[in-house]
Length: 383
Ligand SMILES: Nc1ncnc2c1ncn2[C@@H]1O[C@H](COP(=O)(O)OP(=O)(O)OP(=O)(O)O)[C@@H](O)[C@H]1O
Ligand SMILES: [Mg+2]
Image (tube, rainbow, N blue to C red; front, side, top):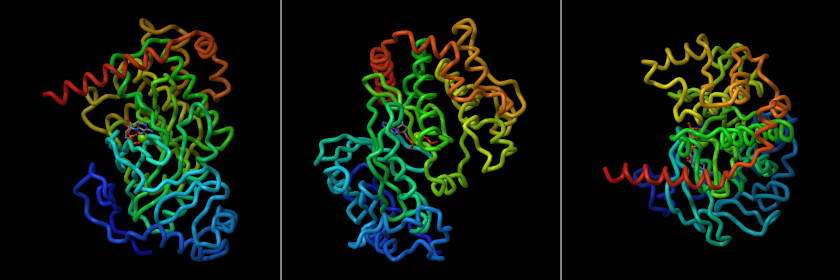
């Protein structure tokens, strides 16, 4: 299968923030993709997919005009995603005004963009992949499940499209951004409890309603807005996308559970219990303001992974947090995967019940934490 050239960046589409990438050469990539898709059949051996996959109902996705269409939802064409089937607007790059860079991850950049026709501010995540066109289409189709992911604890998904080898993913803009930017001063127990509740509810929704395991629970994937709402993003909805990312995934901060590092469960054996470990680690990081297996304690990544697999798990300080909070986190960080609680048990834990019942002004906390973040950012810029 031929490999694509590097994808177009926003600057090559006429947006100014991301200059300096090599220029792709196929402005009609989306149309090509749609046309290629329209010629495929469920039983097409070239698709390399067994007939019970999404391809088996391919006629639901391809309309006579050759556009790739998700029934009642989005239509992908060279200009972007058309929501006219299900919603009354259309997303295309040309209608987006790029406002700022929200952050850069391992696989691409997230921009804040303003969609002029709807006047909606969105987060646009660009994921650069070196993949063949068909794998990209598979990713887009798998991402379609995100339209069903509607929960107060999950970042809203607006649609995805691709240009050359980049997947562009439009989602709800969370104006106070990710948890890692808000916790450096630590977190009072009430706020920690509300964050834990939101994450557990989000993870439980994904599993119960969509049969999705998140696979990447960490502070940068937990977002907060000015209403003090806490929502999850970047869950592993697309197996194809996960696979293509996993090959190059070497993070310096691992939130992976011991059994994932050792690989005892195998790639198919990933269970929700591994996400529970990542949540435990995330809660300790949020409470203390730093990653628990930080580099100051370990000289290299192998020592760090060795500590996760063979060492005692970290714990919340019983001087600063209640016994209930410490117990909840300790259960999440059980070394043995079978000893970690299920989501329903977590929600019945006395600390979760207590946190659910107590009133916490999340809006006020979020505003203060965000103001501190902006002040730190300004100070760094002035240096
Ligand atoms: N919907 C959003 N609203 C506001 N900010 C966002 C949104 N999505 C992502 N961000 C910000 O953009 C940053 C980069 O996100 P991205 O998912 O690319 O990488 P990451 O999660 O930080 O790290 P990694 O690539 O290791 O997963 C995040 O850290 C977050 O602060
Ligand atoms: Mg992320």
